[in-house]
Amino acid sequence: MDYTEEVRGLIAGILSIPAGQLDIEAEMTDVEGWDSLRNVMILSKLEEHFDIMFPSDDIFDLTSVKAFAEEIKKLKG
Amino acid sequence: MYSYSPLLQAVFQACERHPDKIAIIAGPQEITYGQLCLNIRKAASLIQAGGYKAGDTIRLLAVKEPHFIYMDFGAQMLGVIGEMIDPDSGEKAFGYTPEDIERMEPYSGEPEGLKDGDVIEILHTTGTTSKPKSVCLSHFNIFWAAKNTSDFVQNDENDVEVVVMPICHAFGIRRIHLTLMNGATAVLLPNFANVQLLFRTMEKYHVTTFGMAPAAWGYVRKISGTRISRFAGQLRHIEFGTAAMPMQGKKEVVELLPDTRICHNYGLTESNRSAMIEYHDTAHLDSVGKPIADNMKIKVIDGEICVHGNQTMVGYLDPEDNKEAFVDGFFRTGDCGYISDEGYIYLTGRAKEMISVGGKKVSPVEVEEAICRLGVGDCICVSHPDELLGEVVKAFILKGSTGLSLEEIDRLMKESFPLFKCPALYEWIDEIPVNAMGKKQRRVLKGV
Image: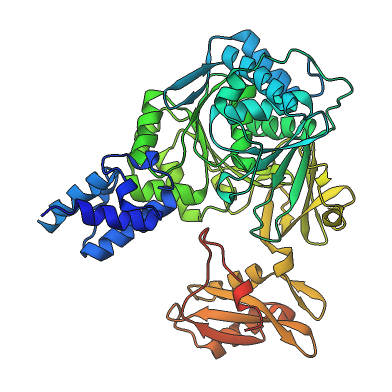
């Protein structure tokens, strides 16, 4: 299952921007408002929403919508 | 040239030493010292063309971009006071584009009659402990603020700094100033969010130093585990600031970066970094260290930490704010504390959080520590109104953090602690209120 659009919508919600404006490949640094505080909110929101725990070794690589969606896919099996 | 501005002099001297050395890196842009100084002159022309003259104030949006740095120094060159506006505040500032600077002819004059004691920078306090105020700093102040910090952390021309903290506040802007006055290199990054990018940047440019808040350290650790230790041999120094670091955090930083100089500043916008502690000074890690330099004097007046030095502000913009700001020429920090025989400064609480029990001042922190020593996991003490004494201490004990009953705590306290400092009231609490920085929020419980 592909979680990209769902993840995109959730992250856009936290960043208060329209989902269509959020480039799924963009690194967080290139997205306006995606700072460390928001990133912590994104991590916990996605963990709660998908009922998962991001392994601490993987969090380092979660730097875009795409990376989050792929990680969730991996964890959901 | 620019005898009124030792900071500007230092930057231009660095340019004379090595005009082709990279001063600033921002994304794909690499700006040499020669280009930096040329662009500072162009920015000065732009500001002048905007009708500003020495003594006027220009509102500058403190974005972490090279053009802001040109405007900051350009204004200093003209003696125009730069008022730093937080880009997230939504407030209006002088409008321009980087191209506007680019197309100007470089300013080649030097205004007459300027002195190093003239106000040149206005910073806004964040208002975490009181209402926000506007702090006026002179050329002399901002030079010494940068120089004292640089000397303590041992920054020099060989350093490469990654600037990640916001630069609308003293912490970030001073890091930029000290880097450029030393002729070192500053790499600008928007924030700490993408730790992978931070590490890539540190690797690519062989970064040797940065400044960060303890909260950012916590974030970097959460996101990247212990990966930062791979820079242990590369990082020459780190400066922490803006808030206190928990003891466990201090030990952890030293474990991961054993050979790095880890400095933690104690300061405030009004007097920049006033004291510093280095984390390898393990015997004194519960203090905020010693005065940052010989030109900074710190003393305790009526229990309050007061500071005076070359970097201490000229005053607040609003004269009303200055009325109670100084005592004997020393700036009142609002923090309570004491200085040990060895000269280390220890904080015991905020002055306005002091509880006045029948006119005697009691530090809530001191009482909390005494209660915890009895075998209580955590607690928070606040002022409670009392008909007879005016105020008394009320203690909230964290539920489940101790096997003692409230009556036992009360009895043990009265046996071991000055009676007037002992809480008159006790209550259990489910959770200790803390803010995002981890500071106890005594205000929310006051009078409860």
